Length: 142
Image (cartoon, rainbow, N blue to C red; front, side, top):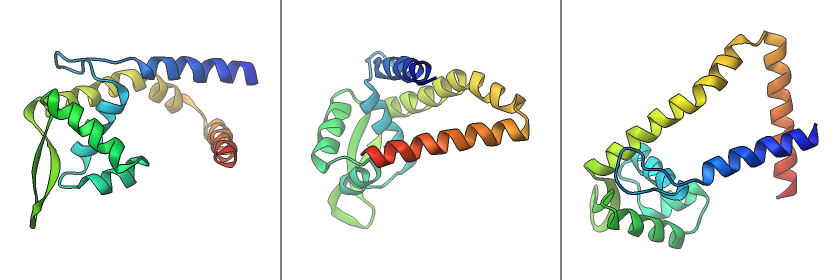
């Protein structure tokens, strides 16, 4: 079972590392599209708060935001109520990538959702318990 689980994790990890276009011409790496999603889901949030939410440094946020600015997905705007601070906001192109990423996950996750809907209550509880224990194991190893 451990070998099977490792193979599954590795396959998903490999798939998630692939850059994709998400409705635009440029390839976006996972860190870039996830930042697009974080900015889109949290409008008006400054870099330090984005860093806290993403669990990365402010420097990492600055680098990713700069890449997204270069690609035309993000621009800096005045923070509401504080004209001295700038916050990243999605451009129209950024919004296209945001919605294309949502659509991508709807399509990719539909098989999983269909499978989960077929589970009995007992089966669902067993799977959920297993996943929670895996998460606890991962947390203990950090």
